[in-house]
Image (cartoon, rainbow, N blue to C red; front, side, top):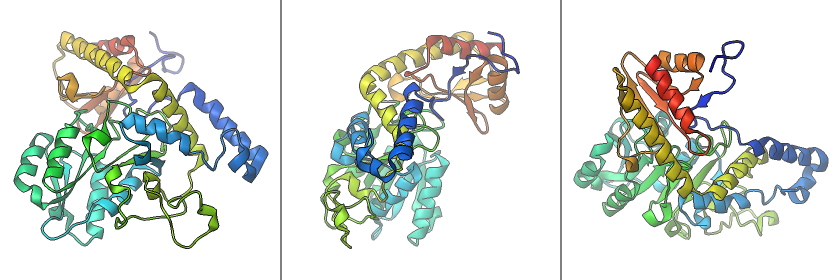
Length: 386
């Protein structure tokens, strides 16, 4: 396919949905409807809009819960991912005695690392000692050996760099058996792999909505809190206007009366124009189903892997696990000499959009919701030619 005028391709093979998902066709029209409600109704849109603003967040709860395998009472859409991690650590990082450490994977996403280190420092501890970074294959061994020192395990469900799907149920069970709280960052797992967070027994989880969930840059994030924590009267959390019982919210009482739901961790009223694209996206996932998407993901990713193996490209090595059950749809390739220049050439010479992570990782994600087998072939063929 030749480049269009200006060097850009008329149709690209978009393989960067693990970084920013594409815009659903319904998003623009539905967002404009919400804007029109503001223009035409003003404050009355809280109750009179086609999608009333006051309960706008409620229809998101069911689809979000089904997406991650949770109960609706355990799920809430709010804030952004790292803000939510901090709010969850307020509750679930409770260092005491010799149990003071937070365990993360050694190649955790930098924002998670910054959040954990700053939170530990805020509590008066030295992050260089109390934040422990362990390679993924060694996590179980570390917990067996030193689990009694760990207050919180906080890991990425699918690693952003390698694309590896960690053993979420196994690690959760082991961490909790050692007395630690276990939480998960599902940024690269939600909308990518099938999840059963309630049945797996994780204490909490958080995820973003702008990658596989296609809700737009900086989109609102999600939170899961296991039901065993929801009715604990002694639990610590930060609260605000949206934490209290909605039935009595406008009594304007000075003391919050939260319900035993994850909504109690919400603080502010939801930003409608940011929440709309999340609602649109979740409806799509609810209609298609993660079982169908996961099945197609395995086929697409397996096809791309087969093409890459067939071309036997010197200087490019697959670092993502080859076992399909141990990965999502992302394949990470280590490129001899660096991946940045290769990523740019893929885009401008072949119309293939992937992304790179310094110094030498090229990430390619055939997203099952919109990627095709031809997209996979274009990626492999472009790499072969380069």
